[in-house]
Image (cartoon, rainbow over all chains, first blue to last red; front, top):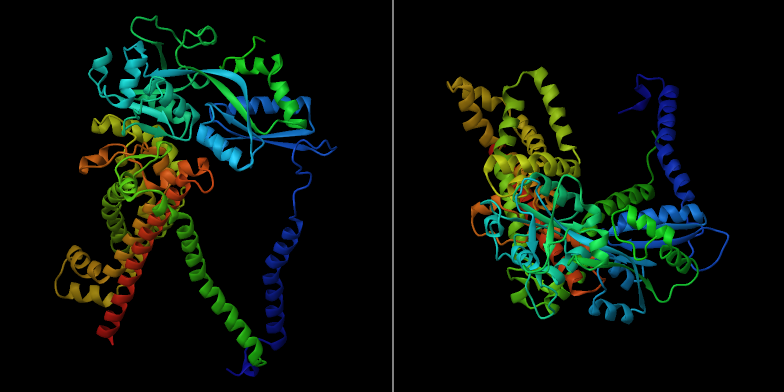
Length: 315
Length: 298
């Protein structure tokens, strides 16, 4: 096409094209300006070096402990504004894996570190040191309409391994049992496997029944238990909501049945109780040491009590 | 207008060509990474374990069959629900609805496709699962059927959009000829228009299936994540565990380079291959029929 015969005047045409070119360049200019603002984060030092800048502590792991760890972090922020503790969940397994990979300062775990994890950590140069920071009871939850009020450890083990399949076998109605559990990366899951399904016996290799529902969050468990009369679930005492019913547990049929509470955990009459741990890579120094020392003091342990866990010292 | 010099012409051609090839290169690089991280599984886990029926990674049971069958069951259920509803919707929107209704319905269907899957999963746990449990008298609502229904809700917009475009592309002369021969409107749609748009509709279904296989959040929240081996079609009404939910739930806890890590990447390879097969089949259908219709119409 011969542009000389175009109907638009030539000047107007080129003016339009030029303005369009500038408009099209704008996004590129914006991207360059914004990208130039990116750079390495300031003050992201490993904690332990005392500096006037903010020190960061990475705290990762147990979902059971995540609310507790958050509450501690927020309170500590008030005392020491120059220390920033970042808390994430993901499960005890996730926290310990990060500890092995040395990508975290403090790992939260609601179960003890396993021998193979300890070996992997030492091989990687990360030497885990264990601190017990609180105690917890595992509550067994059923639907409020379920007539069952008490169970023995053996009955719980048989329910969760699949040997008992109907509520009528443990004194309830004629309904199938729907078993709810946390995912395999959860310390609560591993603790329950070892202490309840396997009754604390090291040679016992019983597993959860294959149709146990592995739900990714505590909220999922309480929602299903609250709604489904067939359901049974377990979780830390701090996650029990008023809409579900907690059953009393006995070590055996000749022992007394006890409900989970701070008292029954501390006087060891509730059979499913555990310690909550924090692990560090090597002996803690500097800011990490100060944080852990503060956690073991009465002020921090009072927070433990408020959240439904059991403090290790009476505040 | 000034003519462009050959140098800038070559430069622009090279840039455009490179951008085009980069798409293939990204896919190949991702696949190579998956292979490098996933193939050590074959050395570390015996095949009888890997293709066994028990998935319990913390005790070294790495049987991926329950996961594979779980994904397939949920996808099958979702396809069975989504395909009839999607095609009928597409037929209504393109053939039967008046023009003003079409202007409203098509964007609305696109909006349904934009719903975040985690929102659907949330609604699934709180509302759909209890309702399904009471409606079907099964022991729990967190089952494959609930996942299938929600996945169908995500897939229907894809199927409707692409099928509706395919039905629209059928030349008017086909419909006019059928009506001239005395066919009713339904006979025209069912026996003339829909078969003529067959390749586009098949592409739509394949795209929907591809999306369903890879969907993670909904199945993680709603199918119960129980690694049961499905033995019959009644497994649709029981909890299942899909491959995508397994990777999402467990990837955070694995130590870099451990056996569990390699097995998860192996599952990723299986997923990748399934998606690849589905997409290749879809594009093969499209290309094959284009040549045939070109021959017929020329």
